Amino acid sequence: MYTIQNSTFAPSQDQPGNEYETSFEYHCSIVLGVAFLCTMFIALKRIVYSHAQGGTETTVVTAFYSLILITSALRGVWFLVFTSGLLKLQVSYEPSAIMAFSHKQWLCTFLHDLFQSLGSISLFSIFILILVFWADILKKYFEPGAKRNKPMATFQSLVICLILIEIANCSFFLWGFYSSEGMILANASLLAIVSIVCVWQITTFSNQFRTVLKTLGAINQVSTESQVKRIVWITVTGNIFFVMRAFMETWFAAILIISYQKHGKVDEVFNSNSWVMMGKQLSSWDVYVLSKHWSEVAILCLMLYILQSRFTSSRRKDYERVDGGTENIQEAKINVKTGLSSNPV
Image (tube, rainbow, N blue to C red; front, side, top):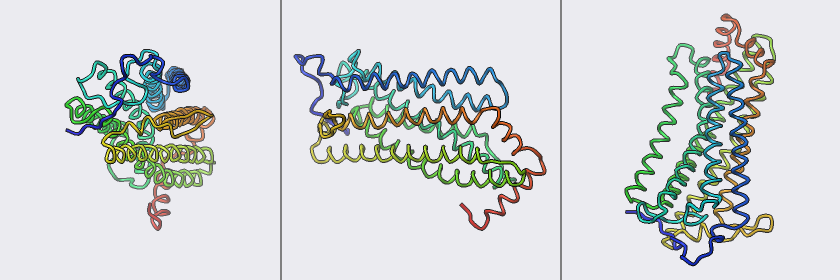
């Protein structure tokens, strides 16, 4: 069995309760939890509004907002219930190497890591859904005669794969193959890989998508500038987020592995106060949590803004004009395909 051990396995019985976390960590957890709950309520309000409006776009819009709502809810619970120390469900604020069934708080530690993982999967699913729809639309224009799978079925298959990987990770923990810190390492490695794939796919599809929009706009003699700008917004913000995420998760996984190889434990990684922010001494775990989750708040807010601007009535008319007309669409398919044949992506 592989066990990542931590010298701070459990606090001593005479350790004061207020040493569970610092005042800075406590207030940061509360603020982040409230921030995620705010995005959750905004997403819920948008879902209700979308259903009231009706139309063919309702299903897709609801799917995006539902993922934002689920992500925000999971993150809000994670910060306010598990991380803030209000209930002190864990051994300590920083992760501890606890084996399944070996400690009275092992279940709370397991749920803490599980909520963290599910929140990440839900967040990444937002961009996976975007990429799936982009791929379907691009296939329509670049391969007119090819058989196309239903986008939602493809999306569900990809998300189920991520969930199955997480189930396997949880099973390894419950079977005693590794400790709770092993779960954290496995999740960091998975998220780093998914982040790199997302950067690659977003960049590739966005370049093709902009070409399609410009070609359709030229054929139908309407402006597609707003759509192109929206694609650029999603590309830039998505790539910045996933590049940061890939770097953070790779860095985090690497220092865990190096620390374990050198010392046989990883408590130095979580507990060393080697960072200074706003005049506060912070541990590597503090920096990891703050950087990771404030970037998540930012990307969720940006997605709410982009989705709101995408589905205004004035811009919906532009899409109808661009996509209108069977003859123009067929001509667009030919022109887009031949126009890019000399420069395949």
